[in-house]
Amino acid sequence: MDEIIKVYGASWRPDCRRAKRFLALDPNTGFVKGSVDLDDRGLVLTEMGLQTSMQGVFAAGDVRSGSTKQLASAVSEGAAAAIGIRLYPEPLEARPMHEMVGT
Ligand SMILES: Cc1cc2nc3c(=O)[nH]c(=O)nc-3n(C[C@H](O)[C@H](O)[C@H](O)COP(=O)(O)OP(=O)(O)OC[C@H]3O[C@@H](n4cnc5c(N)ncnc54)[C@H](O)[C@@H]3O)c2cc1C
Image (cartoon, rainbow, N blue to C red; front, side):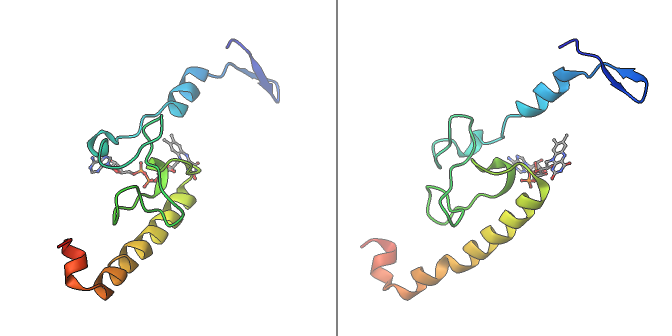
C-alpha cells in the first residue's frame, strides 16, 4: 500500500507490512496440539467457563479462540479461568472414589 497520509501538513507513508505481521501472529500452541481442541488458526477452543476440550484444563487470553486480543480481556479471562480452576475439583470431591478412578 503506497497511500500517503497528511496530518496537519505533515506527510507520512504508513508501513502496513507491520500491521500485517501483527495480525498474523501465530499462537504458541504446538505443545497442546492433540491434547486440546484448536481452531484452524491454532487457537485453543473453550466452552463458556473457559474450559478446554480436556477436563480440568482452562485457557484464557490471546491464546483462546474468540478472545478479543485486548489486555483488559486477557486479565479478566485469567481471573475467570482461575475461578474455574478453583471450582473444578469440587464436583470430583463429591463423587465416590470408584467413579473418580474409573473402576
Ligand atoms: C504490538 C502489540 C500492541 C498491543 N497493543 C495493545 C493495546 O494497545 N491495548 C490492548 O488492550 N492490547 C494490546 N495488545 C494486546 C495485548 O498485549 C494482549 O491482549 C495481552 O498481552 C494478552 O495477554 P496474554 O496473557 O493472553 O498473552 P501474552 O501477553 O502473550 O502472554 C503469554 C505469555 O506466555 C508465554 N509463553 C508462550 N508459550 C509458552 C510456553 N510454551 N511455556 C511457557 N510460557 C509460554 C509468553 O512468553 C508470554 O509471556 C497489543 C499486542 C501487541 C503484540
